[in-house]
Image (cartoon, rainbow, N blue to C red; front, top):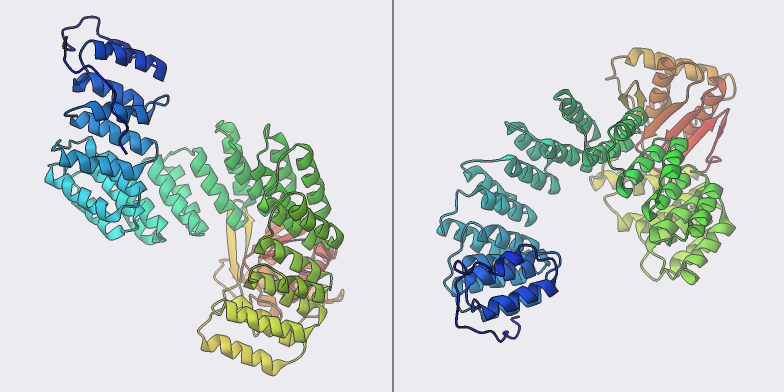
Length: 621
């Protein structure tokens, strides 16, 4: 670890304090290693090679400055007979800064062995090194040393200990340090909140947040981000509005979190407001934030605004291109996605694996079999990527949609890795659509074996049986699901009105205007029955209970509410957590025609643009 010692003159001629033209002053303005070595040689000639004050300054520049040289700092260190705590601290800080946390810990051990006494500046570095190096046992020993050497009340060290235990995911120890602190600052609180959040303990994080007497933007951001990362978007919005009521402003980190929340809820108007705030406040629009805005507009059903933001970017990063191509894929605009990919190539932006997942997905959703095959081969032969499971899944979906079931099965059998449930589930869905019950049953049972706790896999197989009229097998599949304690995820739909996201559960009557909404649903169904609507009682929805009356399905409630609250001709945007059932899909097509409305529905798989009795998915989803 230690370098060969420098050959230095060891007999001092002058002390630092007595030499008026000391090169130590020059060290303060030193900016390169060449300059440093010149000053170092002068210090040696002055006989200060063993002077800790002089050599400490040399070590400091080498170890921690951007233009330093940690190896040179170690050479200097090896020449010192009795380095003091400052020099040890500087060497440890340098190792940490240059991302050698284990060496930092070793120097701390050497410091103790050489009987150099740690001080308040020692422990923050070594604690952070234990955290970065995942040195759990060493970290606990250092924790004991903090108290042994009398720094148990030092807030800086205590905050670093909390962060260390959070990084170890040892929240009980983090909380113990926190509870024993005589004085806690915002960093203490925020670090603990972040720790609970990272471990998925959002409610505990909120309990700590509520105990804070003083909060800053970091603590607000941490708690809101905790809700967003846990997909608890409504609670994120509630806390966000509370923060705004207390006159706190948004920074780019909070803006990004709230844009993700808008995306999750399909809250386009709220997303537009946050985008406007970013522009008005001149918040730096870096690549990550720009991509988050584009993603929000794509997933809230507003491709025009997404393209507007995308086209205004002076420098488009790969993530922005991928996001825009993926957005077009979700909306079933395969040809446009391909054109955008070609433009990306003209701009000499190299694609990655995500690019091809999005491109192949676009081909699948638009039925572009020839193009999908071309880009799958191109990905391998031209761009040198090994196909991943996601790429095979897109190809199976593409071939399955086109009715090429045997070719899709052959592709699965030739995969270099074991096919996952997503890949095989795509084939089961295609078998259902095209009536190949035998193959679908065979693959469907394998899918359940792979994911026995995923309710959607059972429902998919049950729907396959229902399609064939095999009701006894439907019952057996549902019984197997119940016997294993697997519960279906409740289906719900959301629609934003005047900045408020209204959520509807299947058959739910909690909404304050429930009576009017159900009345509107009955009116809708009566009117579309006159133009050919026939309820489809086939059990092919994976979100609602089959015994639930069809007019109770959540998307119908959301659409009815939208018709009640908007002017004629306005577009309705509905977000659904699961796949749209066949009956609701048929009904929505007719509603769009009868009421002359564009209705945009985002379900688990894709977007459906309903207009004048037709859907952009061409009735395959």
